[in-house]
Image (cartoon, rainbow, N blue to C red; front, side, top):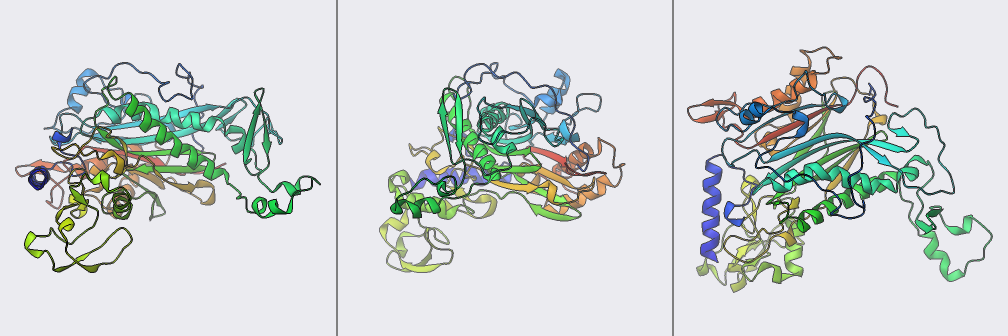
Length: 517
């Protein structure tokens, strides 16, 4: 095992030196201005919406880019060129993205055959399910463009950073928003009703009677046994916001399950990090599973809307799972962390360590089991779980194993995103306030502050009502992070090494002359 791990680490170091993506496993491991009026409701995909295999699409081609780019065959060939690395954006004379969103992308410098990033930007219609509530929703809403008599709309942006193949990223980019839509269908009337959500929905002859989210004692004079009083009084009040968060979390689980079930028929190789944003009823819901990142830039202030999930940031979760289920470590890894590899001659000595319960460090006497390879090893972008993968959340990777072994890594990978919310109605926004989404190819070489400075510099060159200004921001972010090709590779303005990874960026405007409804 030690020889296999050393071989894997040697490949990792070699990949980093050539500008490879350190979060990818080794190949051998095989509105101010209100948003624009929504388009007509799209037709629902065939099949029952409750099934994870309901959605079907044409067979996957060898190479594809986001449909909203509308690339011609010649442009598609240019986008696949690792040498020129031409930046791709939606053309001005073609369909604009919802909400005047800006987008840009560029292929990697040769670490993989194709661009393994994928993206999606849609306005999605959610048709309400037919049932009645004790407090019916008024037929006329307060003028919100997202609400209509048959349901409501949400706006959706998704970035999917693939590794070990683009199959999982392609499928997730085409289907995740449909899973979110289906999870929201039961919630349409509930979300439009200002009262607290019901705790229980009781179905009877296609009619649902809702139990108010409060203790039954307040409804009627029904006598309740004394033994039941404490339990009823301890019921939690659930917010509408938490229902949307739960719907997004469940959608990620169903998407991951569908990738697992159809990975052979769809050729959904590898896995992907997923960063999805939903705008619904005045709030942004930012869901992240992986090492992509989202930040709000408001009046020069930077507000992080996500955090990266890596072996370092999730060390304690990973160690706790290894502690509870040591069989998942295959008798080859230890769940403990040490500052460096332990040598056999150090048996019996005391060395610094930490386990799943510790943030600090302590000393322990080295035993035979401690000579196994650490579950989490390395620092920063070189940190790896099981010497294989540099991210700990995402979709797919169901067949990923430790290099040259039969130890599965999927049990340690979580598909559940962390969801952060941003309430647009709580702040006044100007046309220069934006939400920036980017895959790790952007953030590896460009800091939050540098991104904010680029956003400010570019927006100052364009009129506030110019719808192309956000696309220009996205292009500039990609160009500056990619750098310029010189004799020693792609270089930034400060002559440091530019990003050799795929880079994908969304720039979403938050405000303008007016107020959000």
